Length: 138
Image 1 (cartoon, rainbow, N blue to C red):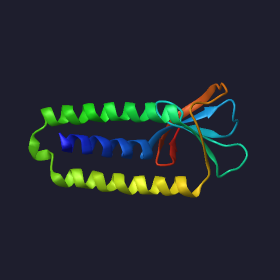
Image 2 (cartoon, helix red, strand yellow; image 1 turned 30 degrees about the horizontal axis):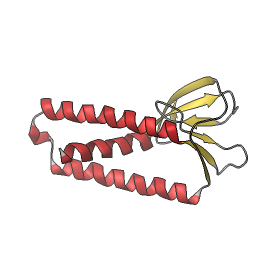
Image 3 (cartoon, rainbow, N blue to C red; image 1 turned 60 degrees about the vertical axis):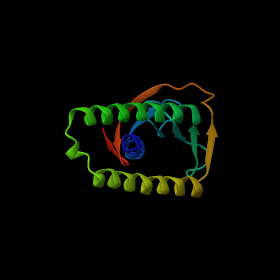
């Protein structure tokens, strides 16, 4: 059970940092919002190094990712032979997740951020697509 939880959290961190969805919103013109399944970060308009984060959307996104990866891990553990579930795989994923958490933490410390519960203005989605580690897939 402990290994399942560690793998689930590790895969959640990796998937939230490396794989996301970009959104072109009507409110922001050429700016791009990020998040999957909900928009959780938008660049601020008053400076280029500031980002607005929506806490409710972040919590929902984390919950969705945890449920998805938990189901995948439980399904894989049930139907794939235990020899595939090695300690090295778990350690490797944990190491990558820890490195990503440290890098994201440094980003939050260095750059200014505005934290809101939810956006206080409506927007319309003009376009969207997938993004893998800052590389857009249009």
